[in-house]
Structure formats: structure tokens, C-alpha cells
Amino acid sequence: MAGLYVHIPFCKKRCRYCDFFSTTRLERQEVYVAALVKEIAARKDEAGEPIRTIYFGGGTPSTLAPQDITRILDAVGIDEAEEITMELNPGDASPAYMQALRDIGINRLSIGIQSFQDDLLTLIGRRHNAQQAINAVRMAQEAGFTNLSIDLMYALPTQTMAAWQADIETALSLGVQHISSYGLIYEQGTALTQAVESGELEAIDEETENAMYDELCSRLKQAGFVHYEVSNFALPGYEAKHNSRYWDHTPYIGVGAGAHTYIPPVRSWNKDDLEAYIQGDGIRESETLTETDLYNERIMLGLRTNRGIVGPISVHSRKQMDEYIHKGLLRRTDDDRIVATQEGIHILNRIIEDLMI
Image (cartoon, rainbow, N blue to C red; front, side, top):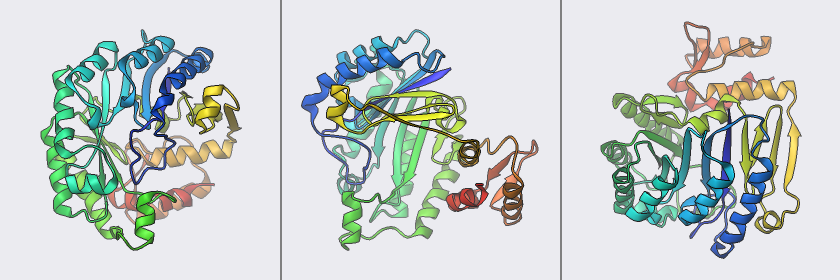
């Protein structure tokens, strides 16, 4: 069973932390959708398996009108789709829009809230406020959505532990089924990175960032959420089916400018060039993963999930694992899987690098 990722690169405003491929040229949406429909028609059977999950990411997919989303879904064919997710900015929410999304087949929303603190939302360049975020969740629920995910960010400049705890409690009070939460990464060239480099803002220290992450994990566990991937938490049965493909190493097709595809052992991607994509020029580049590449990805992706590493382990990796197990940073489960401990997650990139061959 394959997944389909649809990249919608349009944003009304760029966030100060974002380095994803996006554009504010909303006037190009109509011709972009036409190019998407054309690519989908040519590639939707590429995996040789039925498409069971569809994910609209961005950018900001909710800049699209419902009729444009319908054109895309019609091109895919959704009769066999189990999960159809769309990312949504709270600033685009209205009762009519939410109902329209539900009516055309979207059955899961990923709402990019990031924070319920107005000062932090302004700082990171979001175009919604806290009340709009809360209203967006309620509108979705009133429209009949029963599978909702929200995004939250921590380790933001000026963010306090008290503010972070308040965000977690607000999220839990909304009755959502899934929470994705990410510590701020200072990507080169973004406005926030430049602000820190110039001394305008000060980055949160590593100790505080780890404490915020631990608080998140502890509180969500207490609330009944399963911590199934480093940054993802779900009530039982509500794990993201599409995103799990990335961590399970199963096939997915990516359409749109900058989108990636993985059909083992080949990974391919479209260039992140809006006009080239619209014109159909220079679309695909690819690489074939070696056995070593595939092994290392299994280590990396496995340790990000609560399933851990399964399958054969090299002598080098096992030796390193034993050392980390002794330090309490990894642990071996009863069925011989290797998973990261809470402390291990704090230095997971270092552990993964040591285990790779």
C-alpha cells in the first residue's frame, strides 16, 4: 500500500523559522494545480500498489480553494484511501471552509498552531493569533472531523517553561487526537537565525530545551497519548498513517515542486523551482540507495520510533549499542528490539551517527 504526498508551496506570508520550499506568489496557484493534476495522472501508479494515504503539505495547503483540492483528489482517485490529511493554517479557518474540506473527502487535519501565546506567534511570524487557533480546532470538530492533529513548537526565543506548560494544557483541553511537537531548529538563512546571529534574539539553552521536551513527554503520557515517534504523540489508534510510511521505510510518491518519492531502493525528487515545475521542465532527480544506505536508514528511522530497531544488526552497531545500553541511553526490549530511552533521545543524533556503518 502506497502513500501520496502533495506539495502545495504557497504561503500568504513566510514564517521566520521556515526553510521549506515555499512562495508567496498566490497568483500562480491555478496553473500549479493544473501541473499537479498532470503529474498525478502520469505517476499515481508508479509504486505498483493502491494509494491508501494522501497528505497535503506545504507551504500552506489551506490557501487552496476547495474546488482546487477536489481537482487534485479527483486526479488521484480516493476510493481506496484510508487517510487523507491536509495541513491548515488557523488563519484560513472558517465554518464553511472546514465543512467544504470534510465534504470533499479530507478526513484528517493537521493544524499548524505552533503556540497559544500571541507574543510568540508574532515573534515567529505566524499570521494567526491564539484565539484563531482555538477557534480553528472547534470549527473542525463542529464540521465533523474526529481525527485532528496540531503542531506545537518549543525552545522558541523568550519562551518560558510556564508558557510552554500552558500551551500543553491548552492543547489537551481541545480534545485533539494527535500532537506533533518540534524544538526550534535555526536553519541557515532564515529570519530567526539571522536575528540570533545579530544578537537581536537569544536562543534557548540546551538544558532548557531538553526540560521542555521532557515536560511534553511526561504530560502527554499522563493524558493517555502514545509517544510513537520522537516528535509525534497520538491517542491509541490515531497514529499518522501517512507519516508512518517515512519511518517504516515503505513506498510513497511525492508530487509537486520539491516533493520527494521513495520506492525502494530509489529515492527521487522534483526540483524546488516553481516555474520549472509548472512548465514541466527538469522535474526529476534520483539516487539509488546502496545496502549500506538502507541499513543506516533503518538504524536512523528505527530509533526515532517506539518500535525501535528490528532486524539484523552489524557487529559494529551491536558493540556501540551495548555501550549505550550500559549508559542507560538505549534499552533492549523483551522481544530484542533496541529503543532509545528518554535520556537517549536528547542525544539521538549522536547515537545514530555512532551506530551507522
